[in-house]
Amino acid sequence: MDVHEKLDEVTALVETARAMPMSASCIVNRAEVITLLEELRALLPEEFDLAEQLLAGRDQVVAEGRDEADQIIAAAHEERMRLVSETEIFAQAQLEASRIRGEAEDDAESMRQQVDAYVDGKLATFEITLNKTLAAVHRGRDKLRGRGEMDSLGTLGTETGEIPAIRD
Image 1 (cartoon, rainbow, N blue to C red):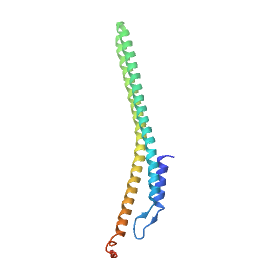
Image 2: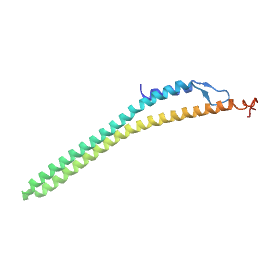
Image 3: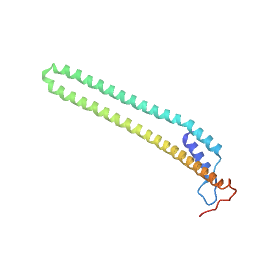
Image 4: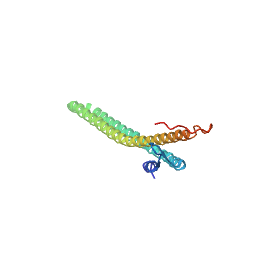
């Protein structure tokens, strides 16, 4: 089961809860909500691990791209040095070295952009999941606070034996 399914369960529990008359509040089973939230909390480390794996994978791909670019550049320097010894083709060697370097930099930049776009997409999805989870937790806490206020209203006047007046 994933985080989204647990959030759906919490949402369904709140949506199907018995409404309080003349109020936006509802009555939910505290044990059920706590159990669902604990299960949700247990699932979150899995999502965090996935995000860390994605970031580690991104760093590895970028490092590999840099290594490959460095190898291409080193090969270009070696080729240029070989061509320098031949004065007839020296000008051509300089052009070729510049072209190879430009291609290597373009390839490296392209790879960086692709990796960044991929990781950004995954992180955006993870951010949405976390925001939904956080919103569900806030709603749950708000509902619990609302129920606490309703409980305190029910105890008003019980110490003195008076029945509290209802105000509109």
